[in-house]
Amino acid sequence: MIESSKKILIVDDDENIGVMLSHLFESEGFKPLVAHNGHAAMRMIRFGNPDVLLVDMVMPGMDGMEVMRRAKEIDETLPVILITGHAEIRGAVEAIKKGAHDYLAKRFNHDEVLRVLRRALAERGLKRKLKDLSNQIQERNNLKEMMGPSDVIGRLISDVNRVAKSNLNVIILGESGSGKELVAKAIHQASPRSKGP
Image (cartoon, rainbow, N blue to C red; front, side, top):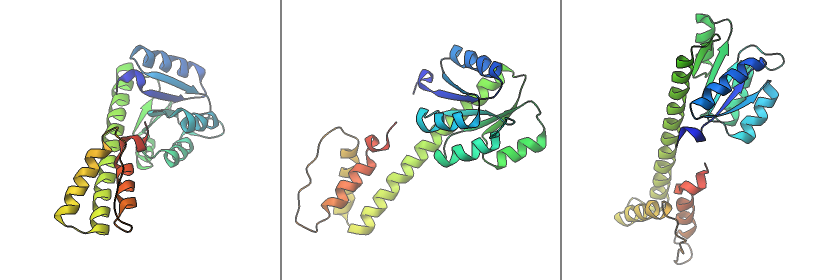
């Protein structure tokens, strides 16, 4: 996916930080989104589908750690980069242990911000591919468990995967109790269209 389609959600109560990071990300071809508090950020995470979250650690109301915790409940693969004006090793270690992708101090070095951002995007892409692969393997195993490990079932699984990748409409014929519904479900779950964007 090209960078211009990658949405970066910046959450900071300091409007100047939002403006500065927005300009930086736009200049690099990203699509920045800005929220000035945790509640606005949660709405944007639910409805805006950001690819990376940059969130200030210290904000009134909902702080950065709480935003990260809630964001991970919505999308566990969403990389969160915490930003703060008071960087210290202990805080960075705590943030990483709780699920942050990285931790940046304010007075940003633009090259460093972009490097961390691109690494977070690459990690998210890898996690999504692994999740898709895991789902495909699970579906294959489910078919084998339900229908048996024969050569015929092996060919059926191969056909399911081939059909799932196509845009074809498929009619599944067979006697009652032969597993038509199971095959239809496997095709649907293996299809990239069922996973959304």
